[in-house]
Length: 130
Image 1 (cartoon, one colour):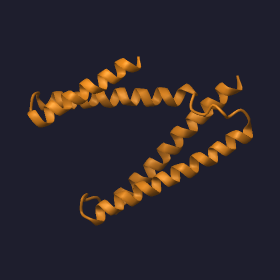
Image 2: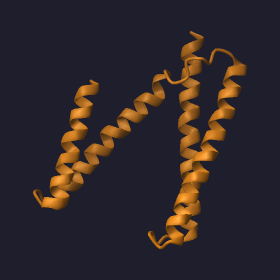
Image 3: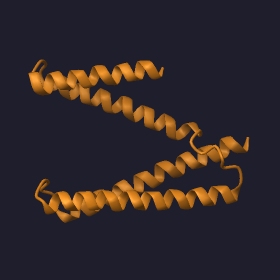
């Protein structure tokens, strides 16, 4: 399954490359390649989150709370780095976003990272308790 997923990603990236730089396909086909690629990547991420295999050392409530603190700390670290990079890109006029966009996107990324890791932690805790 992993090999077929990897081959799918390679073929789709090749199709996007051919469409983007060589205009090999129509624009609609390139957009379709990106939709299929994002769907495949999204499926892999969602399956990994709900599998319950990420946190194999969580067996009791104390371990759960410790990992939850680690998740929130790492989420805030990632959000800070994301905000710093976005701010520097805006400062050097590489991107032309509003400050509200940068703050909003940073907040959305923070919530999604913490939520995905929390769901994975809950499923891992349930799986390890069995």
